[in-house]
Image (cartoon, rainbow, N blue to C red; front, side):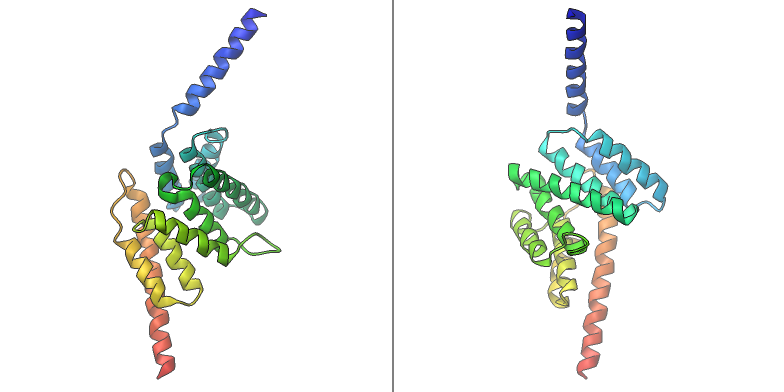
Length: 212
């Protein structure tokens, strides 16, 4: 009996050590590789691996990244599984916000706002433009020059046909300082930002022609 108890204690200690040894830099690096990869199979492999690795984490930063992994994975799978993933990601972000909404420069607020913006509204999903706006503005207060939050708020404004205001926030995102250890993520995000800037300028020019 004592041997069994001893083995159980060892197993608990091993699992706790394994969770503590997860480096957020590794999660961020592999997320970027998967997100901006042209190889969908490789991306799916990475997302599934890290969903498993992060399944039982307690650290708030890793909880946020668990949600980010799930929400990113949702773009690479079928609609039914995709909805389940974003609902699960939503719970992770809400948990993180309830603990400390300032964690990782407001990343949980940004990520939840992005979900509300990009997920279809009821009856298919839980998308809500007003909630997206409020969450993203709250995150901007925490990280006013952040690349991600300004990109997503610019995207929100574009969806509202507010193209000039969208450009303002997209340009803030484009000028954001490089993030330490995240060159792949920065490069991929700036490519998305430049695409949105081009779309905004096209819409602005189109509107000018209509006025003439």
